[in-house]
Amino acid sequence: MPSREDVIEILKTVVDPELFIDIWTLGLIYKVELPDTDKIYIQMTFTTVACPLAPMIIEEVKQKVGTLDGVKEVEVEVVFEPLWEPSEELKAMLGLL
Image: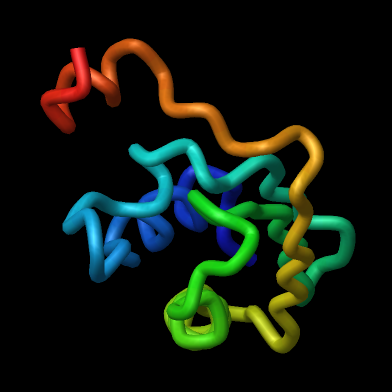
């Protein structure tokens, strides 16, 4: 069974195709839990409620995390509370400061 850190490393390879930054660095991942020996639960959000690429990103998360040894199920829950807010560091990276 993978560790939480293993899952996070995989999530860092999923890149938002509009911002070209991985979803972990963007702060789109709210929770990573391993409730069972073969299941991973991920709670995440998107930069906007109407993100047109959401289905593609969710599928990529499920596919990549699902490749980890021992994982049989990946559950992704999308939430919009709290709304995504870029950190000051991320704002600086994006040139918004």
